[in-house]
Image 1 (cartoon, rainbow, N blue to C red):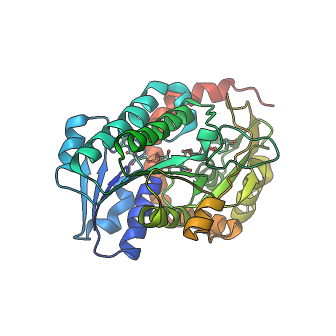
Image 2 (cartoon, helix red, strand yellow):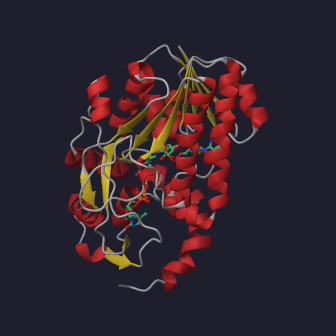
Image 3 (cartoon, helix red, strand yellow):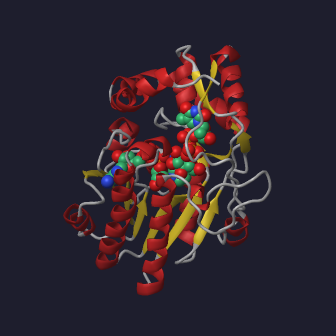
Length: 342
Ligand code: NAD
Ligand code: DAU
């Protein structure tokens, strides 16, 4: 089996490559990634020695580069490549539409031309917008994205649907909840707070800290993706959730407890604009159709994740010294100084 992974140098993509090497040894994997600030070759040092793995640097929004990579022919393509951070989308929405919308269409077009047997597009529960305290999003829920990031992902989902309806192209879309685990860039809530707490820095909790997310351990997500890739129905949409609804304040308290740090590190700050209140996924479709369920208990997954960051300090300190700080200095430092303390 020959597989193209796009965005495989990021958090979920690199975990997926590691997962495939364990679960499907012998599969030929090409990782096509632009190596933006979020793409880190250090996530894949273990894969570099594998003769079945090859890295190709390239941009999904560049037609020539995408055409060239598809020229070698693939059975499957799995698209992780995206701008993925909601906060960044507030400052630079254009980049999100270029990568996440235009880039996805270019991939679909070239995949179609080259005769890929199945294309899996990795999307998010954020396309559904925000829930109140009750209810769940099913695959039939209307799209109601709030942030530029979510709107770009919703747009890409619609393009995938159109390629299936119009051209009969074999594409499947998955929509997952918030992932956590090893190799997550330390700008997202859990690695951001873990790496800050290790350094005894304050943890900027947005608003009242009561926003709820449905947390999914990254290896469970990878398992769900492989299940859908091999057994899903073309043209289908599948929710992949962890079944772990948790408020941000609850997660923050747990992180502090695991690391033995004081609650005084928590600093409530002004809310994120357009901040969705709650995400929760109805995952009965993937369970009934494909028998898939998440395996990781949130308490265990969080301890495992915190331990990984404790054991891999060089990995995240290298990031903080370079890629992350550049953006932080430009957009957040001044804002942090001006932020009203609640
Ligand atoms: P990430 O930001 O960690 O990684 C994104 C990767 O895409 C990086 O390696 C980056 O270099 C690459 N990339 C960005 N622009 C590119 C371009 N133009 N061409 C080629 N490569 C490019 O993201 P992640 O958290 O691993 O998310 C992966 C996918 O899963 C995204 O599509 C995201 O929307 C989706 N998703 C993420 C989560 C989550 O909780 N992190 C949840 C659900 C869905
Ligand atoms: O739901 C899936 C989505 O989860 C993915 O599609 C996105 O790629 C991924 O980034 C994530 O989006 P969120 O906006 O939910 O994740 P983030 O880690 O940025 O924030 C999680 C929650 O924590 C959210 O309610 C905002 C809050 N938060 C976040 C940060 C970074 C804080 O309170 N303080 C912070 O400093």
